[in-house]
Length: 224
Figure: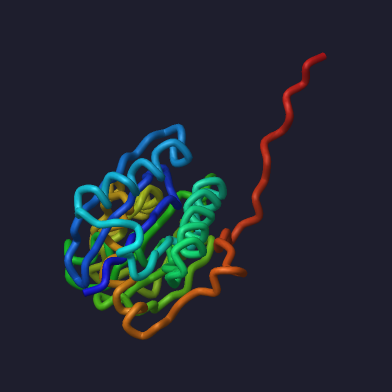
């Protein structure tokens, strides 16, 4: 059975998982305000491999969250995944971050899932997934107002992610809003296995994260 390493760094959560087929073998993750992915990621990879008694050379593939999300977090996760794939000569599997978020919590409510990542101001990165993780509405940067997925307003839908709290003022009693729900690499296991079986691999050399929005650097400080 194939071992797959899963890397998720699209938000403040740094999460790494190891799976064997459909089985989650090991998981290591932390959520820190300061985005400590550069310090934690390689350590977490080593930790899950040691817990699973697996060597890097035993891996059959590496899956990585492709975004959208944190510019810096995605760069760190993708560059690490690509480096390992090149050195081990194994395939890279790319999974949409919002699908990972939806799949992490899909068993909490029967029906559709709307994963929501905070995109600042009153916007979120969002999409709509069916119960079996088929994409119904593609990923977009969407303003949370009275028209926010109004076509689903009378349906029981689970809203998850750090942007879900922005939907609370809408007062939709049909929606189950879990604003304290985080993304996790454990949500990548099933999705990555399906892509591995179908040989749906990313081009390791040319793959880049899906940022959705352009990176905007902060204003430089004035020293005079």
